[in-house]
Image (cartoon, rainbow, N blue to C red; front, top):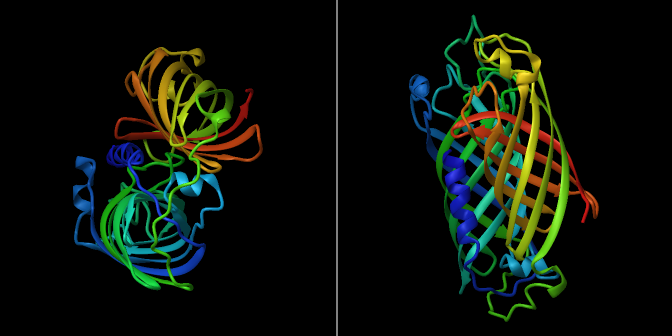
Length: 360
């Protein structure tokens, strides 16, 4: 829920900007971090024992304006980071490690100052997980390998060949209910990033090139997606249930940074009839829903934030409303890979792994 709120704010802010001209540059960034674990469920209060402390070490690239999307997003920078953190409770939670890709999207850039969002995703590793006998109090993570997602914002001041930035972010570890318990780790951080660039930074202002090609403006697109996944439900130690689905959706692109999407989901989720008591049959695992979403296109990447409601939902173990957020990557002109998470408000349901075909 917290991540969705932050992502919604970033999407809204992405409309406001002024541009600068820069050259392609490479750099190394070191960012010490301090924060605290957020117990987003009442049953997680015992996990908060002290402050979270860690760092990120990043290799980054500053875009140079050779592609249209560099200008649309005010010359963002991106790269790869190594993450480490002590979450403040070594006895139960252990420590976290990770490797993730990231992109920094400026809202404002002027005279060496910038205010930007920072988004990233990758793989995380936790040194301690739930164990019925040895670590039963860890109800946050049950697998050592997890997805790592973070969303944040930063204020940066650039100098001749370096920069300093004050940032805030939310870092999330989760396995997407592949194995329970999986309440997940949410940590809020305050960071101070120090960056050294291999070339001098350009600060002079320049007019942007034409921001959007007319043939792509207000363009309609039609897609079909095939989804597969798996999840566990309580009690712990149970079996994994399969999930398959198909989604047909339509997109309308208004501007380079504004795509609106709507579609119909049809899902068969084997876990549903085992999550509620009652005289149910296998056909009660079938759900149909309709949703709407905002999509932020960044070159070959699409960031998605959506919300929908069930039209057919016989058992209804999680309510009538569902949410979806995640990313898609363009493989070819018509094929996309999809990794999103489906949730019901603050409760993650499962990861959606999919392949998408664009018809038009």
